[in-house]
Length: 328
Length: 118
Image 1: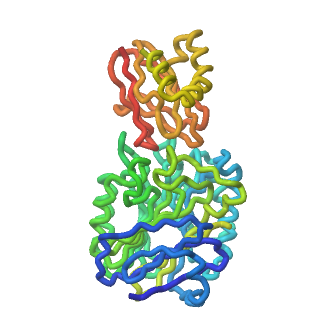
Image 2: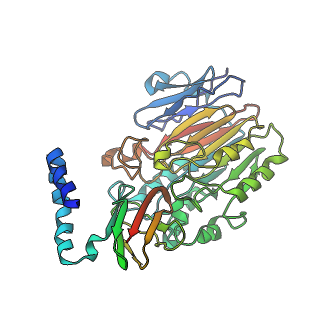
Image 3: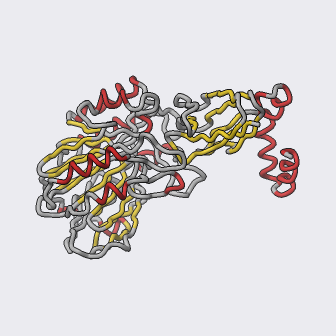
């Protein structure tokens, strides 16, 4: 079982996971969650995701950062327009995220934004984000969060960010042999339910991946987690199992989500699930507060719990390496 | 009935009840002035309070968002839907027929509530 460590020396806290599809039964998966700043590290060892104290892992493995054949970065939940105590200056923290991306030792080829670009779907909020993200000088692929489709069923979002998409904004594309699928699970939500993909999108997805080789690495990105993180707070997608059933034949599937404003990951068979930091404000760990609303942390700790994610794909290895870096 | 519940709350959990008195006081004072002000649903901490509100026919119910994130009041059968309510924004709907009206937040669908019109 190979073990690779990636390390961003600028990050005060990070988590990492990396696994080969080596046939080890991971049904008894472990969930690993790390708050940047607490310095937890998750790494696949012998097929089991383990958590380590950061200090014990630093040093000897720092040089093993491999040059990938495809590197991209994920940002999420910018919530432009939010101005409450949990973060009165979301412009500054989004700019810090851009600085972080621009300082990555291996520059990402493009960015994914996994939704909640804006807080209230206002044109000026989208404008501000566009203006700030321009400084990355990179192509950006977006999927909407529920905050981006508030009053018009997503029409403005699609006009700005997903012009050539299907249906309510879903699409796919290929980069360096990796197949990317952007899904929309924030529309037509049913009372009492979770995120929803819906029949039309599921049908499209099945068709979209049908003709791909099993060896094609797949990256699926969507706003609300496509695994059930915490249904009590709506942190899951009702029909995600159906979507994942179309991806069973592939050796490597990486699912990237936002929405819950904290990093969390799970490995299940061939699928690695991962949620990203927000660039705006943190939310509580599942069940650790009365509700999932914005969490206020001391001002000097805010950037420890916001961040970016970069993802590295090396051909010949099944799994993509996913590394979170806080803004601190 | 409501008062009885309130009094028993005092006995059971005095500190909580004291806090409740402090919070509820302005609303209680208003409710003596006008009927309409008692027909309010507070949207707070991703819940509707009360989650079931019983009102007479022709009542106007007002939802007020006390959360730091927006909510969208949406009836299950499409009868009414608010715009996105930012913090402290309000939305009102007048119920002219008796019945039970279920609603939810269309962007946080785990949030559900009912208005019973008698």
